Image (cartoon, helix red, strand yellow):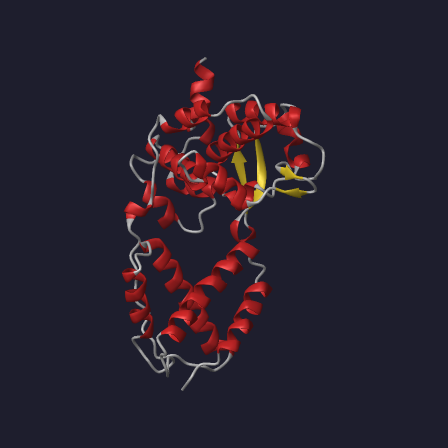
Length: 287
């Protein structure tokens, strides 16, 4: 039985109905199309009846040296795609879904001095660098994903800018709301940026009438030899090492499962507020 590739669009429509973010939907599409491209290049027929089709695809992914986390995501996507066809389209695959264990080596944690050294590299004498320093401080302070950071609106930060609040609510992955905390360092960097920010958009990190793109931030960080995700990983690791309860860290980071949070486990659990444990906040209070 040959598979009709056009049916993939029905799955994408299904994802849109679930109100997933466009970034998530784009990832699903890329994962599926990569699989279909592999099938086409290898001229594989009767894919639905082939119980080893996903396993063979994983072997190909290993050959091209994809990371464990990327392979894990692709397999999860294909599993959801196959389940959708079974439940909604009466198309039943015989494929065995292999389990991909996430390699902890994929989880990069930068050392304690790295952030300070990176900030020291940035000359604050121009708009770009003042904004970049504010972005870096906010990423590490809050643990935000880049997709969450770029969508913050200026009016959502009003109380923080005027000094009435040190936290704000964010709509994160999967449209889940959570509270994020700003350290004094991050607040000061934000104020420095606000002083020179142009009023061209409702977004905090604006680019003319729109917000800056994820790609722009990744490019800026790449020039510094780091990834935006490194700040998120660093915060989660520091909170766990300093004793914060895993369930509380899960809330702070917006993880969907505590299993993800447990990757950062290095110390005993303790239920104390994030404000007490954040390294940058402690450093600011000691001055």
